[in-house]
Length: 190
Image (cartoon, rainbow, N blue to C red; front, side):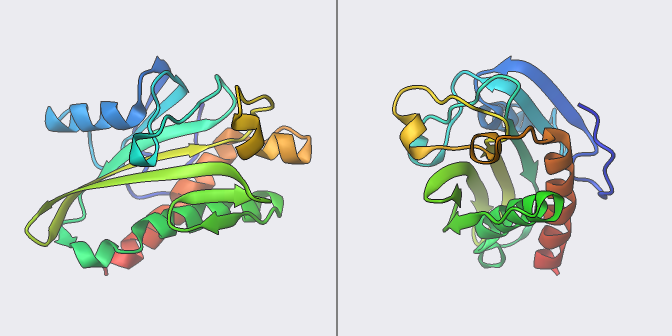
């Protein structure tokens, strides 16, 4: 996966994993060891123990979807980040709209939906010192080309391909999302 990004820092470094337990857990472990830079993307083709909100499992089908995490070091009042999860969701919705003229919905604060089925989810976890947000770990799962979902997931989850019967570029979606979100995030910090 090669991204031609127009970002200052977000996604300028990317680590790819064919299989990983959880991109979110990996980022947290590596950040503790100072082995990861701000905005460095950890991307997985497949997660064996992907996590969503409330410690729910997040299913990642191999080579079909976006599953990635990164850390930000905002060093600002935590109140400034109140809408961060929604801004992440809005950035993904905007990327898909710009690229494919498809309108997705947001079920606040962290679900990306299409016709009442979940297409994506966002996990944000903050570390604060007093009222200052020092670190924010962000994990994103977005179903792009998945056609079959295991068990009862087919009743509640969907993907771009399942809904529109076409192949979509994960690279284009990821690159456009990173560009839009970085701008929105930097505006938030002003």
